[in-house]
Image (cartoon, rainbow, N blue to C red; front, top):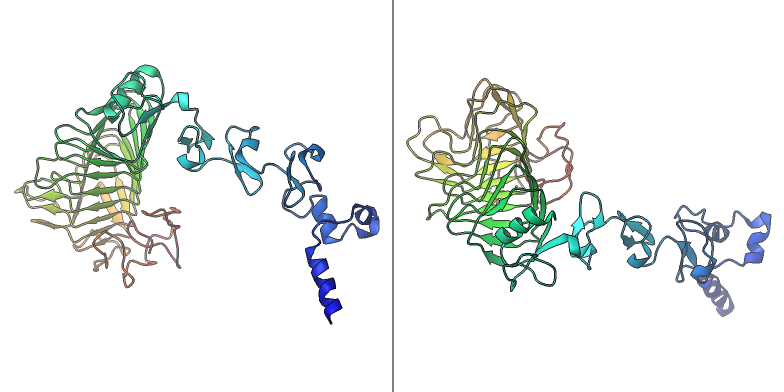
Length: 424
């Protein structure tokens, strides 16, 4: 009995095939021999003890633990393709976060390449306002970094996680890719960020501006992408809109909250707004509450899978809704898979006309005739997320076509898409 156990243990510990055994054609189908010649489906190469024996292109590093020739065992092995700088599971891949790029703290999420530090503009706590905003001598205000982007030709800006009090508007007039990393930009007296005649992407930044607009963009050649951005004001101050746009605006996974003059105002250009929560905006003196989409002459826009709740509009402006105002547009606008509910004000939750229509939308107020719209209590918690018993679960547009929600969670999770920004 003991002898049998010892034999089993010995066999279990054998992970490398005898090369003479494998050279026999009769044994080529043995699983260990298949592993040795790379035909196990793992993409690995031949058996090895060190990298000197790994000569197949793309498999020139020896994983000495598995005794296989592989593409990499550490990121420094990934030198062949600049868009695949990270070693993960013996294979090179593109970076997916700034943390994948320790030398520069900046991952180009569009290409998967790690940026070179000399090509990045840095904003960090304890920095100073200087002409370069280099990694070794960062700036301490985003407005300074925007100016450096305009004069240096550099477009990548890394903002270290901290709270920054800016005294000037961060005015972008040249292309930029801003990585916020959860940092907070405060501006008490000016618009926090203004974009004109440039293509600017801002990711994971908190913009807190009790003074004026949080983010504003203008110009027919201007594009503003907001990804995971929070725009918040203070309802007791003179703060204005969270986002004000006359440009080509894209928003995904954003939180627009507590802005006194209203959440989002779009009066020209194009827009694609998805997976965004618009919560607690407006006041007793604001003319809009959550979202205003008016005067649009372009087609192909989208306002989909958003939650507009708890906003307020009680100013004496006849017909203005507290949730979503979609009127006086020159081309048809279609809003789908949204929750517009629990907004306080003198008029209705959502107002549309012949050039605006909603589908798969839940609202406290009746919408124009559509058998896909509902008038139910959506079952939201205080953050705009769905609770367990929400009737919005699995009731969304089957053709929504989004693969993630406000939190970045996969859509759909159940038998169908959920209505609103949250996939429960």
